[in-house]
Image (cartoon, rainbow, N blue to C red; front, side):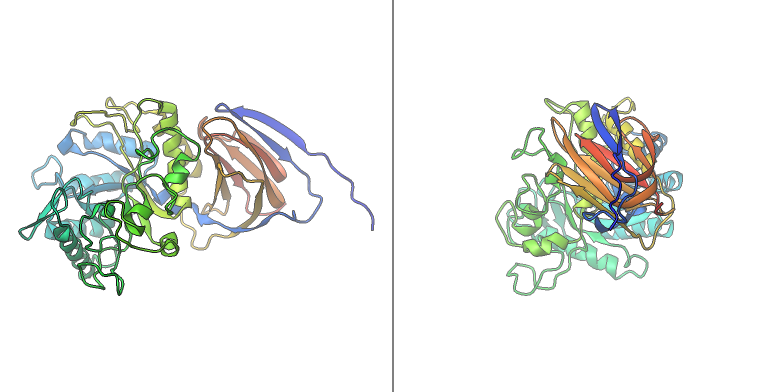
Length: 462
């Protein structure tokens, strides 16, 4: 057998956003790299649709025109909202939300919010949103451990000894949605913080299974999706660290924050048993609040990197939708107000700029019904390097590889299996244009630190 001539790859070294990466352009020698394996892509639009935000509205001093401007810039696809503050005369009316949808395309999760109990109003206004194409889902009460409810004359949650009123309210919300021919197709998200239950009314389940021994009967239906508020900094994990957002999205007991396991596995307050770990791994789930404020060791730069990485980690670890708190710092509350993508004066923080760049790089108004597969492998992938494979509606693969190291770098090689005719490299911490355009590429050497690199790969082989 005739031997093949070895070809030395040419390397291009670039320093981007404080981190360098090396791109090895390798001419084709073998038909397929032995380490590469087929990986199924997810539609880019599915990831973009997961990106949401919590915000204030005119009733809390934020003009709609400003909200539209900020939502457009960052590329949010949905907004957490609800009937709290909603009135016929305003300043926040149902038209506020319809206008937001018309001007930006965002859909709305529609909830009872803090302490709300008016299921009839929620359903009626939700139907208006649904008819306009603006409804994403219904959401149960916001953190009833902090904001109790009074439902049908009974108090629950908050400082009350029982959560039965919360359970009855969530059960009735689910029934109201699913019995309506217009609304039945929309998912219902659970209350947030069921892990705080003081008595076992079964809110750690979407549907109470047989033999659960809860105070509500087996078969009680509460929700289609588990809803958590897994803020990435927590008393159990208060400082910046490697894999900060990856760990917050962890569905297991290893997560140190207020995550899926502590709310739907074994409840954090009274240790009521819910789903097994095997069930949690595939449990439909969303996050309606997460994020961090800028304070102490969390600088504006860390804040911006955390929020960008957060959306990637959440989606990669199974969260269908993620809403970050907050679009803009509140001006109607005391205390530390530095959670926002925007400051109170509407100036964008780095978080807004980085997310704008990421969503612009990935921008896709189309849909892809059946994403394909891409052969690739990341050699010697350390625990602080993660990847998400997307496919744009035009067929382009978008492989996002990101690091979550607080300091230092991880050097990895991405083998593409076969030579690709065109590859573009993007760094959302520097802008929206490619930092490198390459042809005839079969592998890339990356030095990753604390943010994502987007590798856009032509769908055809050379």
